[in-house]
Amino acid sequence: MIEATELTKRYGRTTAVDRLSFTVRPGVVTGFLGPNGAGKTSTLRMVLGLNRPCGGTVTVDGQPFGDHPRGLRHVGALLDAHDVHGGRTARAHLTALAAGNGLSRRRVAEVLAEVGLADAAGRRIGGFSLGMKQRLGIAAALLGDPPVLLFDEPLNGLDPEGVRWVRNLFRHLADDGRTVLVSSHLMGEMEQTAEELIVIGRGRLIAAESLRQFAARSTRQRVRVRTPDPDILPTLLADAGARVRRELDGAYTVSGLPADRIGELAFEHGVRLHELSPHAASLEESFMQLTAESVEYAAGGAR
Ligand SMILES: Nc1ncnc2c1ncn2[C@@H]1O[C@H](COP(=O)(O)OP(=O)(O)OP(=O)(O)O)[C@@H](O)[C@H]1O
Image 1: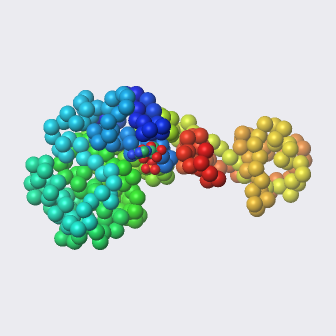
Image 2: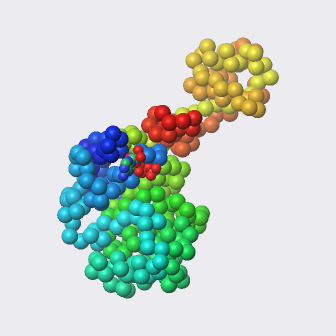
Image 3: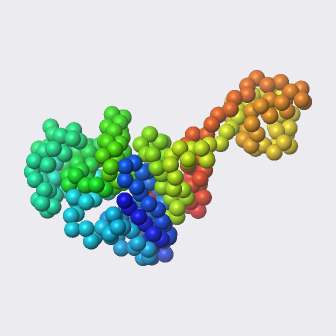
C-alpha cells in the first residue's frame, strides 16, 4: 500500500505537487492520471525517495521508501525508459542491477523472457526502439519480484500488441495481490488498464475513485440534431436552457437537454427534425473537461 499525506513539492516558484493525499491499495491496478505537467513524475519520485518532499509524507507499506532495506525487492519502478546506458546490452544492464540488489543471474534471464526480450538480450540498448526500452524498463521493475510496482507512462511507444501485453501483465501483477500504480496523461489509455483512478491537476487531487464511479459521475449526454428549419430551433433550445453549438456539417450539438425533451419542443413548435441522436461523452472527454482548468499549457498559449 502507498499512502501520501499532504505531499508537497516546489521547484523555485513552481508548486509541482500541492498538499496531495491519496492511498493506493494492493490487488488492483490504479491509474495515476493528469495532464502534462500535473505533477505525476514529481509524485512518483517522492514515493521512491528520489526527491525530498517540501511538506507532507509518503509511505510504502507504512515506511518511507528510503527506510526499506530491500530496495528492488520491495518496490520496482519504471520512471524513464531512456535513462539507461546505451552502450550496454540488455542482459548487462539487468545483471548490474541484479548484482547491486543481491539478485541472481537466473532472475535476469527470467525477466528478459517475461518481457519478450530474450532474443534481444545480447544487443546494445542504444539500438533499441522506445517500445523495447519500455519492455526493458518493465523487466528492471520486475527483477526483484516486488510487492509494489510503479510505472510512469509505460504505454508510450508500445505497439497495439505491446499495449495489450502490458495491460495483461499489470492485471496479473495486481491479481497476485501486488500494489500497481500506473501513470498516464491519457484517460483513453487507462480506460482498459486501471480499476481505480487518482486524477490530479496542477499538483492537486481532482478525483480518487473507481473507474466505474468516475464514468458514472462524469458522463454527460450530448444530442446531435439536424433540422431543415435552422432559424427556429437553436433559439428554441437556448430559451429552454440548452447550450447549442453549430457543427461544420450544419448539424447542432446540444447539451443540457435530453433528447426526448428536444423532440417534444420541436414537435410543439412544428419544427421538422432529420436527426435526433444522443451521444454519451467519452471518458477522455470527461477527463479533459475535469482537468481543463489545470492544464498548464493549452492550445492558444500558456495560461
Ligand atoms: N527538476 C525540476 N525543476 C523545476 N521544475 C520542475 C522540475 N521537475 C518538474 N518541474 C515542474 O513541475 C511541474 C510538474 O512536473 P511533473 O514532471 O511532475 O509533471 P507530470 O504530470 O509528470 O508531467 P508529464 O506528463 O509532462 O511528464 C511542471 O510544471 C514541471 O515543469
